[in-house]
Length: 432
Image 1 (cartoon, rainbow, N blue to C red):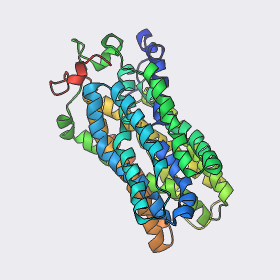
Image 2 (cartoon, helix red, strand yellow):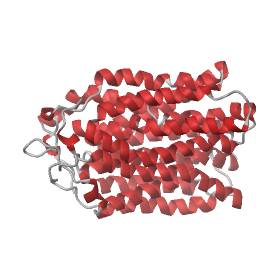
Image 3 (cartoon, rainbow, N blue to C red):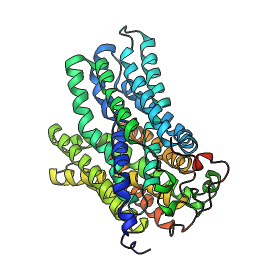
Image 4 (cartoon, one colour):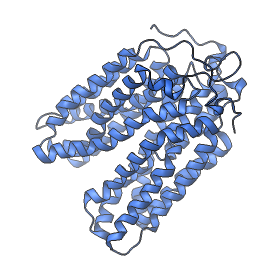
């Protein structure tokens, strides 16, 4: 479990061969259904309440619908990426996501009861078609291009969500203030449309001779366990539970952070600054975690990094909070969030191989999506019932530490995997 040896000449060529694909993947992640809905829905609350008289909960229900649907469909889209290749799945999903998101602008103007359900229906469609434009697909291709530098490459790929957080909200607010909330949905749909063009020209899976030798057998077939074998392996469930614990603790803390800061005497503008620092933490966490995973066993990296948000939860306890402590809490929380996103993709490839990566990653993405969607409601319920976030923060301290500690049980990375079996024809297909 020591650090990896220095990369050889072939390894150093991974970025020279795959940088255009990685660039297209970053744009795809940035403009896909992973960050876009979460970065705009909060800004629709006031205009929707003003036009229809809906409650805050009614306005935000779509993001839960989207998250739950996307979580259950992640293994399906992962299977399609394994079988038919990442490129067609990602391109078709980007196109469908762009049309579905723009279609929300067609929500009726009449203030009728059915209008709310039509609005929800549009969001259901977004969930049904959008998951193929998330890291579930993009990360499979990056894992096929990179091995020695896989951690850093995945970190760079997932920086796309951080870029979206920096760009999309400001654009959405400008369009809402200038043209209205309906126009915002149509305008933001241009992001996946642009990503579609970039991916069409630059994004592809490697040809067999371009793949790292470590992910294939002597005959040139991808290696890896089947989904069925993964589900009977204790490592799968250790990772699944770890992801669930961290997501359940993090999601509610992230969404409720502005309210927590307000309750502790932090002014609105200062709270916005803290949220910006949290975003910087996510950005740094992804790159730093990826680089560390390329050099050290994941347990040495994951456990200390996933304990960082426990410090954030501890800092947020109590009745008052000075800005330096608030800024530190935000940064550490964001840093760990960036680390967790990297780990899901990295651990899938290293412990289960690439032959059935999409299906296995999709199953491991499920707890992330489900618990991230449920966590904000749990935090809010605790606050509504007790008048404080402290009880759930105290539980979250344990969940953060336990989630990181579980990964210490995974042991060494497997040194070899079986060849792709007949139930994974996509493993031998030429890239589209």
